[in-house]
Image 1 (cartoon, helix red, strand yellow):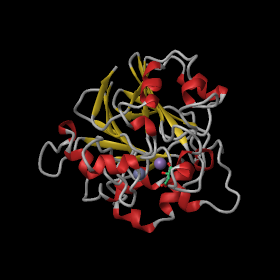
Image 2 (cartoon, rainbow, N blue to C red):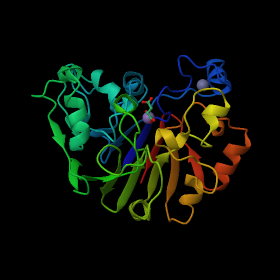
Image 3 (cartoon, helix red, strand yellow):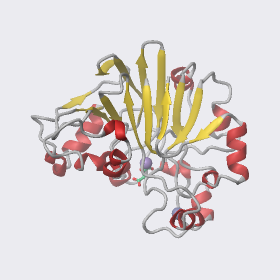
Image 4 (tube, rainbow, N blue to C red):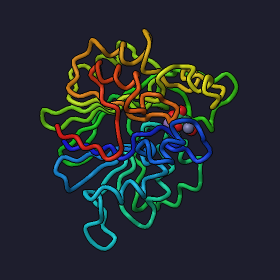
Length: 296
Ligand code: MLT
Ligand code: MN
Ligand code: ZN
């Protein structure tokens, strides 16, 4: 299986348009590599590709990835798009993918209902882009020779659908992880995850390649940096560090290559020379960067 990390950032990207934090300023000044918003591309043969999430940056991401360039007039190698939630950083790029290009659009029934409630997505002609709801835990063929399974990941409804008293570690169809299997290779993708449950551990154990929620380093970092009022927990994202963090939670699992993706611009691990990056790498993790390619 071939995987391209098209965009390693969380919502907003790096730099985020309205943010003058140390990381965003460094990215504007060329001292940090900019990152686009959360999306991956997968293929078994390098010819037919599926996108895992369609970020608002998808146009630039596709331009930067020669393998995803059109192979003829109005002929994209993208055959399918699979969504892991209804957040804007994962669905906004669907609007860019209009233009009479056929592909399968796959997501859970609840995420399909979110799209159905937003008439602007009708720009994707249903005759060409069938919306194919997928049941949790039911394997399906995403591409020829590539089997995908969606599974519940603790999370919440999209920010724009939050009501009063939102449940932040809901396990259902609103936030899912993806398991991709081709031959003997297995890749697990979890861009958003509020906590690691025993069920999730079982999904991840033995994966050749893992992409995991790297939103924040510490739960309260956005508050401390004056960037917002929410903790990571409130946003439905577990942090990397600390006894409750993802590095510790996943340390005992056997995983070939572990990569943080969906990284928020506030995250100090973005700085290559900082102690956070050193700690993450010492624990066997890779901090995702745009354009990284993996083969398993
Ligand atoms: C998230 O991952 O928490 C969301 O993408 C936030 C957002 O919608 O901006
Ligand atoms: Mn997000
Ligand atoms: Zn910032």
